Length: 92
Image 1 (cartoon, one colour):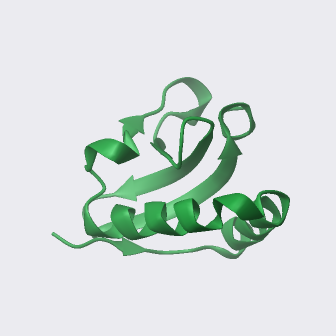
Image 2: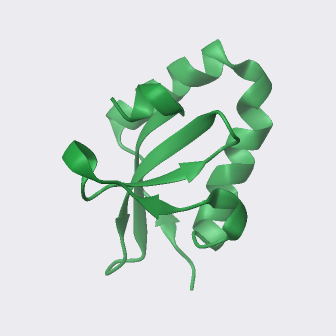
C-alpha cells in the first residue's frame, strides 16, 4: 500500500525553519519522508500514536533526537505532516 504525503503551508514553513537550523539532517529528513510514503510501519520510523493533548496525532523518528508529528489518515492513504523538531519541540 502506497501513502501520499500532503504538505500544508504551515508545515512547509516549520520544515524550512528546521532545515535552516539543522542542515546536517537534510538527507536523513528526506529519507524519513520517502520511507513514510513507502511504508509508514517500517520499524526504523518508530511510528506511534500520541496521547494527551496530542491525541489523534502520531510521531515518527528522523533519528534519536528529532521527530515528525503527523496526522495519519488511513482512509485516504494520506499522511499530513504537522510539525518537525526535537522531541521537546514537537511534544509541547
